[in-house]
Image 1 (cartoon, helix red, strand yellow):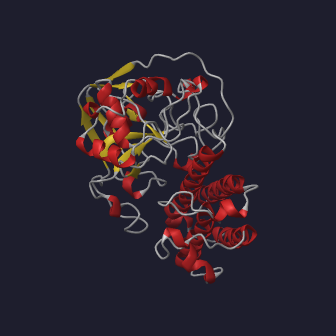
Image 2 (cartoon, one colour):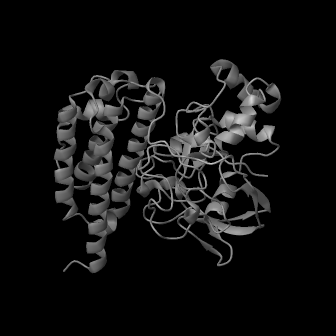
Image 3 (tube, rainbow, N blue to C red):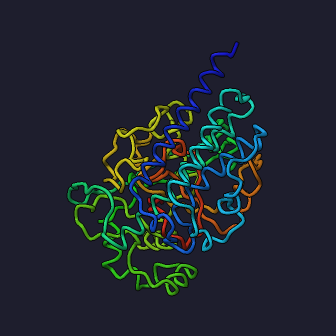
Length: 411
């Protein structure tokens, strides 16, 4: 007889697999073949490649490696593997119905295998696969946004806003807190959960808004080397930008977080206002630590799963929302919007935690512990619930601005 816990775990995995897949197909609904195959940015694969890669990864890890099942459609393996073809050669894709057939064929076998899989031993891998799909969906979402911005302007429904609002600083007291996670869904770079001590600091209640950032732009922030580090100024001279990638002059977006900025732009703004970026540990303490009860929360608001009343996520709005829209999702310290809306740059470089062990393969995180990638926290409007938690870590080079990224200030 199957124990209740194993059965409920199997049911939860089934539910999350299917829910994630519905979101995937919604992204591609109505897409034309030209968009499916186009390489929108030279550093990213075509959006259609991501769809095939999702199927390839499920097939490889769950069916071939775990179930010892022969590969589904092996003719696609060279095309959809992550480490064979250069990104510019991934534009020669099968038709959309053919790729969807590939996904459906793999998923049918995966669900059959789920019924007999040793879940107690494999649950961590199944959680990884669910998050892998949701992460690729986020990449597709911001690539589509990038294309939309170049063509027809803003994507998603416009949201009415109020006059610019104040962004007060919240004092976080000195003391220890738990950072990271050992939960089954935690990725290798989130492990292991460990105690950290931080001196007293302050962090802004909200991410920097478009209204605040407009002041930096209007004050010639992009033209004045005073606010930029040597590396940041060198980056700026090579890129010659004068505004965030996803900038809008629409005053209705005054209280939306600024979005589409590089780490260098975030650093320059912080220098301009006499503040700095928070470290990763400062950000995570402000988001997850319940000082009154001396406990770590999975989400800023507690343990309730993310939903549309707590944060802007899962592509439900399709764009940013005002930073004060989700007051119910505030952390115990009163910091708002720390999950969803926009990723937030931190001052920290991406590195291993104590006790780090690669999973499920060495290259997933370890290859990026190079002292050059910067950590982002919090998720965005396109991040799906399986990847939304305070301990989750994202990482990019400091010059990248295509992702859905903003920041908040600390002192």
